[in-house]
Image (cartoon, rainbow, N blue to C red; front, side, top):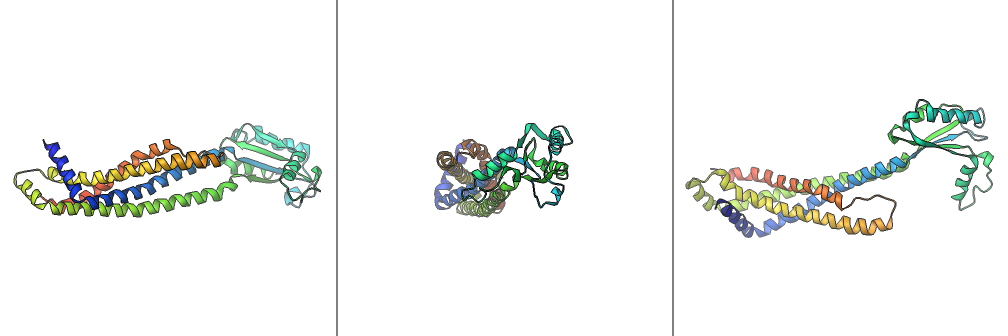
Length: 305
């Protein structure tokens, strides 16, 4: 009987304030869409970092002939120096940081071939293999340990420079992180707007039913019984907004990312519908939390026992 009464009051309140309730649904939908988008962008950034950093190589460039680098004053790298560098990488102080079979030797001829294969203008057509320096391509078990490997190899005889390919992705990750921050900031503004709207909706509902709540107090109804219908009104409207946000994110990921973007750019591991399902419970909790906070702020004044 009590449950039926509470549900009836919730339905009645939503009908009376249908316009405001719809506003709460829409604002909550927009704000939680931004929250979900920020979470999905961060998941995508983490996936890209794990995938791409795992494939990143450390390149150890060895001295060619006629190098102007101070490291190569003694001339081009010798076979003995190459062996010494390889020993450091495979069994020396950084051997445990290098992946199994993670050291690849790229000869002068292979370096020249790689350069000329990308030289459509023919600017390097006159180069010879003798002018090139061989390169060690090194795969690390943990790409974050690049600096340790660099410190151990940069000063070795025959080494011209050591480069980390992670720098290629630095700007991309910086852009994606900025996008996450912008989405989160917009979500924060919209969540404040949603909370204010929920507060206004509950206040209007409470004011319009002051006579009913006064009668309920007079017959001995508890404060929680009086307040619960109003709290549920805000929670129901906010939950509908959260459900719409989850649905919008799922359809966006399913049809824009998985169907269209993944078919166009196949070498990226994109977020999926499963990631949206992972984020969904948090969006629902945020919606209910917004409604709960707004209710506590509002109801103490208008339903005081």
